[in-house]
Length: 354
Ligand code: B12
Ligand code: SF4
Ligand code: SF4
Image (cartoon, rainbow, N blue to C red):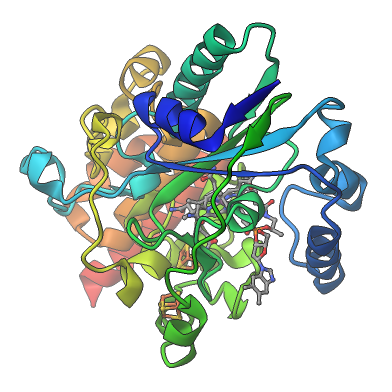
């Protein structure tokens, strides 16, 4: 069975994917080298030597795979469509990274990929496919680069020439050959932009970008905030007012200026807002949390992690008016919440005496 790239792209666009590329599945020897280097240097995150083979060999996931379809969803848009009261930080508001603005991108992806799969099935009855975003066996950025969709920045992010680094990637393994695939266009050489810049490396709060294209995930705040349990005092201090994710290495990047905006309404923040009221978050019941945050990317680690982060953020923001909201947690039976509350309170008390 075969489909032309043009037809596939048209269908993907119709289902809401402005970015699409394809590649033929094969054993990714070059990825194996990259992953082995990461492991040898000790910069691994939720992957291990055991799973390297799966990441490098798409046929272990789908034996009859003929094409890997890489799909991109841009998520950056100027805030003009967003209720400004929800986006202006005040002293009791924390911050969600742009990746958690609007609907959980995993859901958005799965819905659109499911629709794309069904549309392909109508055209090519019997076609089989598997779709993944984040939790699948393969490495999204690697696939995007092999499909010729852009380039890597020093900050380890993958850039699209129009939408910059604010693009989510997912992929589908299909048993369809794709014909008439255009050659990869070399639209820009990002390497030369990075050479005279290094802004992301200097700005990273956790000094997590240890060298160009190398992230020490254990120092990346984005990873730190997703960990469960008690955070070290150094980790807590690094978080600032963030409660989920970090955009510093993307916001500072000159390549991310004057981007084409995403037109996807799914990524407009609403409930929860981009800057959630931390007092409110600390008070929500599990039921209310599910209602308010359940459809948001920040919720996947549960209410407890976000509440711990909210306590830390209130300490970092430094307004003593937050104390009454922190007090109820200082003797909490849950150690992570108790520790965060005691740390925040001590910080506010010390600062108010200075
Ligand atoms: C685990 C994970 C994390 C971990 C650790 C990430 C890590 N080790 O890089 C943590 C929690 C820290 C994290 C943070 C973030 N993440 Co994340 N994360 C992932 C996940 C699930 C797996 C990553 C992985 O396996 N990495 C393994 C390494 C080897 O691969 P890589 O990260 O792609 O690194 C590439 C470069 O190092 C490059 N490379 C290596 N050497 C060299 C040398 C040269 C010369 C060149 C040019 C390139 C190069 O090749 C590697 C292979 O692609 C992916 C989704 C997925 N399944 O791929 C999302 C993903 C990478 N994350 C994503 C995002 C958005 C983020 C955050 C921006 C979220 C936020 N706002 O807080 C931050 C950004 C941090 C950063 N500077 O990269 C997006 C990235 C989109 C993009 N346009 O790049 C992805 C693809 C999710 C998605 N589905 O869209 N993430
Ligand atoms: S901030 Fe500078 S060095 Fe970092 S990715 Fe952007 S252009 Fe490259
Ligand atoms: S997401 Fe934040 S902590 Fe992680 S590398 Fe980028 S700037 Fe550093």
